[in-house]
Length: 94
Image (cartoon, rainbow, N blue to C red; front, side, top):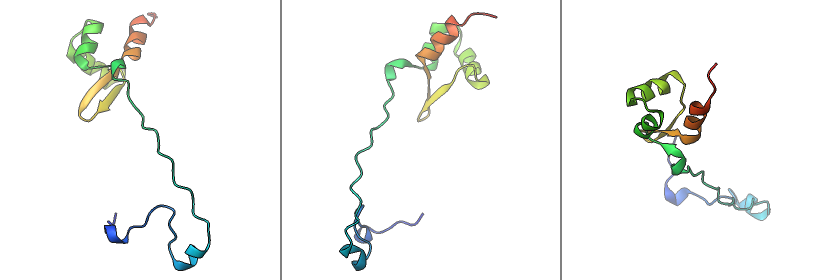
């Protein structure tokens, strides 16, 4: 993507040409978008998950690889939803 120098940038809703400046069809400024926030209290590390499930970290890694648990990636770290672990623990055996 081509970078536009700061001097040539125009604000959102600003007219592009002199002809557009005479027409008052500028769109209203966008409202600030709400950021999605992760409730970090509901996320567990691999080691915390292993402690809750009473298995090794390697087993948790295997569960993540096979799709038994869904990973949440934050940068390079991996977290697991606490609710998903509770569902796994309380799931009836078939």
